[in-house]
Image (cartoon, rainbow, N blue to C red; front, side):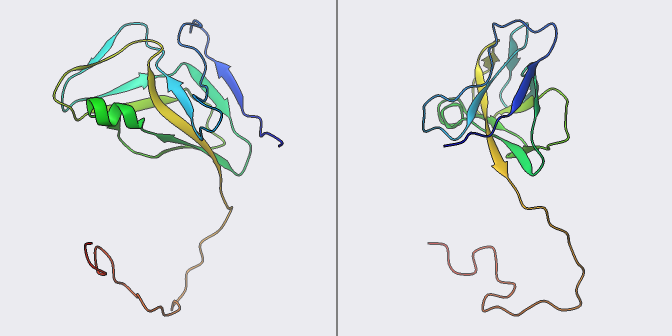
Length: 151
């Protein structure tokens, strides 16, 4: 199987203690993103924080990086991401930063090297929007928000 190569750069001043993203298992879809903050960041219940990763990536055209929560943090600690899934566009060359929110009941400490999110690389279609006076009819039409029942 041929692998897509994604270039990754560690920002200057960031030591190797935080590490680079990696997959936890061979079958994992996402790369674990690691915190690279020098000092511990404590997120109080109901608060949010912007956590640096210390890395920049270069995606090929037609690809995005989706930033998603880690299920273990969500379940065990009530910590998840705002703006999820976050999208990193192929032309973005800034540091990846993660918006963590603590929906739990205890303060949540974030230390350098902690796994804070996951990054999934996805291909997307390049399309354009075209205004139309009419759209095709469907059986569903504008039914939404539970129109087929709740169970």
